[in-house]
Length: 64
Image (cartoon, rainbow, N blue to C red; front, side, top):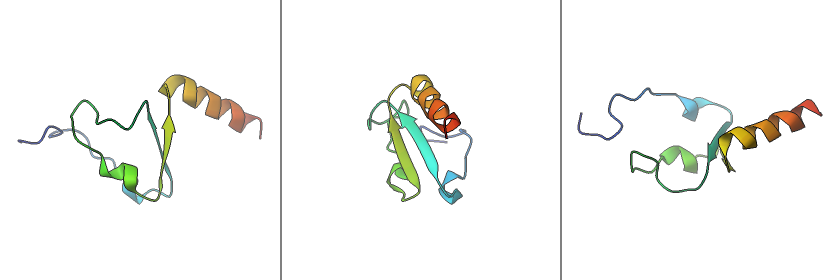
């Protein structure tokens, strides 16, 4: 109960083959704590605005 992320849903993305995290920077989020997932070998960081970045990714995948 004392954790700033208490009650937030838990997603088991550490067990995924590949995870793409979209962030504007490496700064801590609104909870003010670092996310250890960012250092995992299966984690890819996509920096920029999430909506425009993912739109570009989808567009390029459609071209394949």
